[in-house]
Image 1: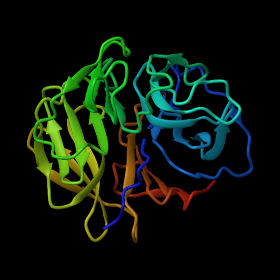
Image 2: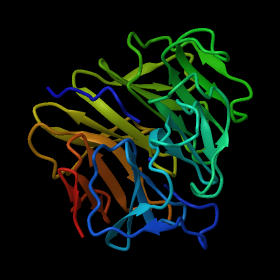
Image 3: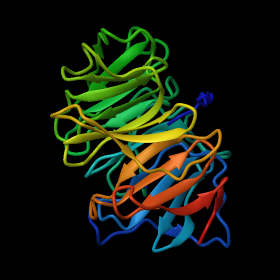
Image 4: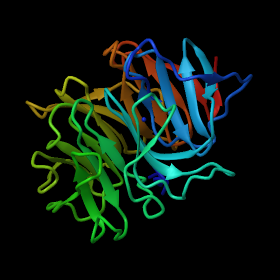
Length: 300
């Protein structure tokens, strides 16, 4: 068994494919931590948020985004915006923690959506083509009376607590369907669960293995999830039939998939990041993989 890190958290990009986040040139980019994984909407950039800002993989090369190296947590991307939480960089005048933030310009600027100085959402997920944002709240705050699973469809103006019936543990990872904000998955120490009513009720999908991560495919037809049972595993759940297909994975040893992302522009292309800071790309839906980071050291 492997132990899931306590801190979890996918830049992604810009509203328009003609824009790009400025990058800081660097001879070597080290991934000290990985708090997410996401492609830009134009599919050209893969971004990994961490304790030290945003690491960008573009055209076979790694760089860091210009600007303060904020500690982004719960980093999640939609077609039109980035949502995140976390902590400001040392020396920043921003309030710690962030609460909920939104960027509509690919991370150049951030809009405060509330709970600044109150909450840091390590577990956060968005629906790619809707305005639905889910968070796991660890303690009461000014907009959430208790701990639990909450969601908003209006950028944090109103929050609703989901009953989460069927879950006996707090989720350590969540994912939201790209076009239906009521459909979501939750990962707990007991396995993988699905809800079709906004988190009110959950049904088990995979039990008996240690599930650690999940994401919906952008066409909404499948749910990909990473697990560990004697070795790292990656699986694809067909949502209409509930058939599970095993995906070839190069991860070895006491390691497993912590984040999964699909390229919106080339939907056969997938990326995975692991708990030991290995990052892999596949251009053929997992039939073959290319490693682009090893033990936190980026590879050109």
